[in-house]
Image (cartoon, rainbow, N blue to C red; front, top):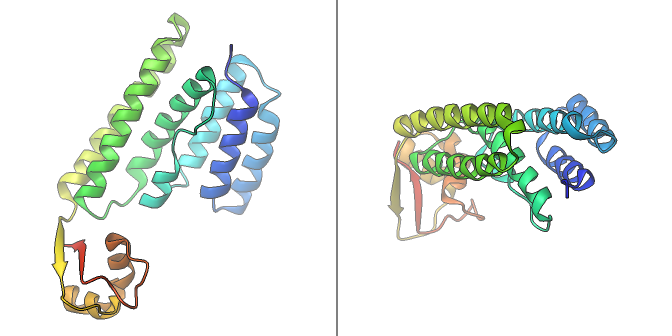
Length: 207
């Protein structure tokens, strides 16, 4: 049974709504995902790859990168198609993100590689007619892993900070980096939900 065009288009529409900030691009993708279900075969495949590229090119943050994920609840054939699209999206998005720490970049690299492996296995199961897609996706995953690996090698390490008392993020940013303006990035790395009173122990960029 072929992948459900309605499910794939609907999933892409949700991703676009979450990640595409540009008004014109968002409107264009809303229209394209709505009419994509009228396409068949190679035309549908080419269109959803193009849509995923636009979505992935809108990713700028680690949080946005995490949004690009294989959905749940699809049948086997639709899940295989979504797996391929997800690997493609992660391969495009990964190198675009300014990974602020080595752990972040390494996690992203592992995620791209793992999804790429799963997607290439899915493509291989499609037979000889998918050779070009296999080569195309393989190259994208390979390049993305290399780029993100380079970012991981040069990114700032994470250190553990223990303060003994809860302090505002602005105060901690000033003491750690001499710049209170870095408070927001401090909150993001620490994954704190209370920037006015940070935890007494948290992870932070080394410098």
